[in-house]
Each structure stands twice: as structure tokens, then as C-alpha cells.
Length: 155
Image (cartoon, rainbow, N blue to C red):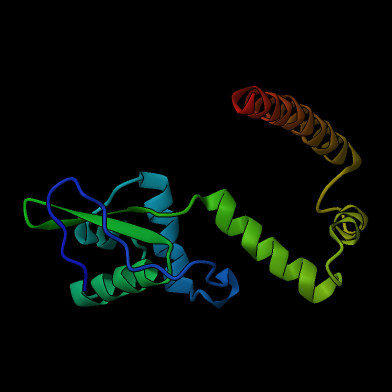
């Protein structure tokens, strides 16, 4: 068990836990923490749609921390839980698992399947392609600048 002091974050995390292995209660609690940003166990219990014992909520929060999804600080002897990973990062790992399982590692096959099954329409796919292109251009500019700066520093 981690012991932390006020305003310090602690985390017993295992990096890269498979989101597909999260249970329904874990997913519900994780969604609450992502939505609220920082919560106590009591706040989580109040937000849930079902009555649970305080000890059950605390156990699930601890397990989510052990799996790398949450981190906590202690403020006035109260554990305050925060996301250790963004919703997008966890979703990315879940999608990677789907791509590996069902599409033999091909993101293109996944996207084509999403369009074919009307999960994603062509306009959304085009917007996504434009965002990827912008991100690559930004990465090329910043990567090129960092490479140039490193060359200058070696001279």
C-alpha cells in the first residue's frame, strides 16, 4: 500500500493493463473519475446508480489504481483519486486490442469495417484524415526543429 502526504500523488501502477479486462463496476467508476476529475470514495458511491458498501467502492478504486488507471493523494487523511491516464489513451489501448484481435493489426481494415457497418460515416472519416494530416505536419515541423537544434548544439 502506498502512503502519501498532502498534495502528492502516489500510484502502484502496472502499465498497459488491457481495458477489455475491466468489469462493469470498474468501468462505471472510471467514467465517474474521468468526468469529475478528482473524487473521494464517498463521492463515487453517491454518483453510482446502485447502492454499494463503502468498502466495495474503496476496493475497486484501489484495484483501478493498481491497474494503472488511477492515482491518489491524501488530503486531510482523505484519499483523493484522479485519473492516471486519459480516457483517450485507455480507449486507444482498447482499440488496439480490437485491431489485433479482429483485423490482424490493420487499422485500415478496422476503419473500413466501421464505415461499412455505419459506425463511422465517410464525412467523419474525411475529418479524421484531415486531423491526422494536420498532426503529422505539426509533428514534422516540431521534429525537424528539434533535430536542427540538436545539430546546432553539437557544433
